[in-house]
Length: 445
Image 1 (cartoon, rainbow, N blue to C red):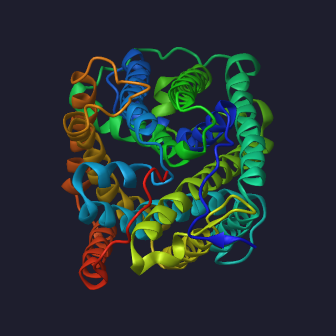
Image 2 (image 1 turned 180 degrees about the vertical axis):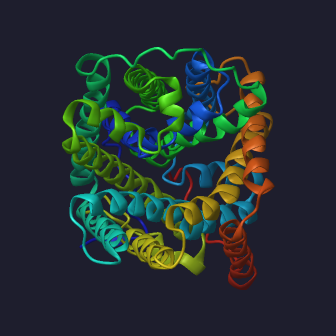
């Protein structure tokens, strides 16, 4: 096996592969969980759809910013690489540590528990069923990634295709197989628009994940295909989200959606009865597995970049030429994710993981957006195959959105959020203890 410091990512991913990764990252369990919360905080049905369109537009704004950075500075480090170029090694180290210990591994654990919750409705594995399923998912999909990027991208393409088919099945049920919900006897009073920003939090969480595409930018056959992949992916996701929300409202009524706790299951039951609950459980399991696999792909590459640059984590900066995978990085990421799965077994699993990751995630997301301004000013001569349109307005909107979501995630700080901040502080201690940065080869991705 040739696993060395000199190994590096190879350009083998097509636009289709990248679209599959992005769609798999974005479409998760959120679209089956959060529409009732969005409906409950939307002024009326028209505003409900408008907010979902706005969420897609805001995500596209952020994606355009990332597309410029990823095509100008393609790297397996993704945001880590952009932050390092813009702000230097201290902030990039903290970001790399945050992804390893908080952001990515926390997301994997969260998705693992989502998979475990729904898999347990199909076949329960005892009192800790969700934790067992979550651990099995992390182990199995990490093993697939260890086989290499060719096997990984094949798995992701299949999972994403099945996931999209599952979402379409829910849409078809709501549009063609069930009768429209009867109109209410009297129209409900419109809710104030002051609740709409709260609804947007859930919408943007449902759209999140597209930024992870930056971590495979060094493995694309064509740099500009990142722009195409991001635009196509978010357009597809926005259309699917609008269609499935319209299907929910058509079958259950707008007020019915707002009051539902399991909106997709309630819709499927209208036609399939009790079997509908099992169908939706299987679809949500598929959504979670797809997102876990895509998150593992992206996360391992940022860990590889961290190890490549810092002697303290040097053993993660090795790329296996035989499998085209950062094997050591995958081992470490899997271990951290499993540790968080175990920790989650003693807490309110999903809620705690959201609190744990959110403040740290939105802070560094915001810094990446600010980094676009810094790099435009500092590196004006760097070739940019794609430039974000309407500069500087577009990145200003992106940074402002991230700042708002950072504030929102800290406004009602809970124990999980403080835990995430504390782990980030541990990274600062490691930085002071580790010191030094390995010299890098010119032109390295």
